[in-house]
Length: 544
Ligand code: BGC
Image 1 (cartoon, protein in one colour):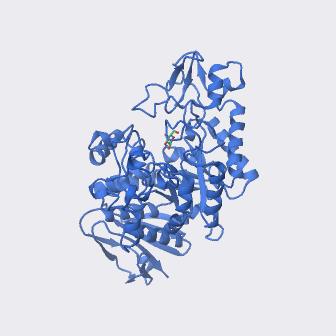
Image 2 (cartoon, rainbow, N blue to C red):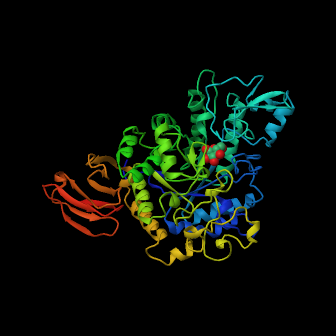
Image 3 (cartoon, protein in one colour):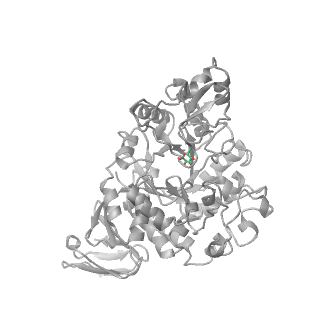
């Protein structure tokens, strides 16, 4: 694939936004669509291409909107369908795209499909969900929300039957063996695509189908259904994407790309905890290893990578020993732990050290894939581990040092969640306005990093290889695309590191920093000696 004909998502940078948390336009204490519209220029200036918005649909909010009660409307807290249409237009006017969550696997128990299903055995909706006389079917399926759920089956008094759910018991799973359910979801896709949306982040896709004797994940029948959604998209629209949320090993995610005919993109989950491991251990081996487990994917598809998101930092894709180590290192207080993960944000995890935060981002951007920035992490927001569930990483965006961090003019006690106001992470210190004015702020460094990455599609398209693997205190990645090379170097430790690299194949070329444009001289036939300051990273172009 060349730079000129690559689809937009290959070289995109995404920005994940929770509308509830971003900006409150009507001062009711809850962020809304008009609030987000008022901040689109900020998002554009960040340099990202596409906004991913968390669920905005009517919902009892038992799972912050991932429990949908009506797929065809907007939660009144957030505004109206008209507001949403305007959001898409205003984003498009600025050259920004918007994708939204498509929650396929389950609905809220408040959805009228479920209400009818449980109370009217003869209605067509009975078969929309997975019912059983007993709670012993599919016993090999794991429980995902381990801290709250004891079974994937819950007894429903009204139906006199058990229903199946992979997440909260207030989120009954839809029955994808029923073609009517598939048609319903296709209609949902159509509704939002016609409104102009640029695609979907498809939630929890491994769990659509259940089969006895399996773990009920990644089944061939599930892939068949997902391929059907892709066919529908391709037959009716152009330039729209499907992004798979499959928290699985890369070899299993590979199947979600199909032959380039299932998902355009898929999250790469397990590289994420290994970036934190590498940084804390001062050892590149976890990254070498996970990338050795990462297969090539079809040409027209792309990984989606991230350091943090709205969920706990998941430790599902690590060994038990690694999980215990991650918890001990990054979640010493039990309040920081949730299910199999850690409910903290990027900056607190990385000791609020801008060197580590920038290194982690640059490392992510140097690997294959299109990266996502989680709202607030671009300014180094903190978290609140005392809030329920994952709400501690979903607190109001910090715009300035005034009332409610500029998020809302409502009375502070009426906000949907308190703003972060503890010492080094207080909104009085960490906010957009303060960082706008400081050329060395995290925000401005992030903007520059995003700009540089986007200017060089080699990061999106190039092959990669690790150099100097024996020097495990540093990570060295050589990206190559046709006759262009970029060397990405990371010192994972708190001490100065000398690196000796064999770059003889590129002798006589200039080494130029992509970050500041400085030249480091010509490459010689002998080994190239480079020195990296503690937690320093370099992006070096090897120019012909
Ligand atoms: C979302 C979570 C949600 C779950 C159930 C996920 O993978 O990211 O926030 O709780 O799906 O819908």
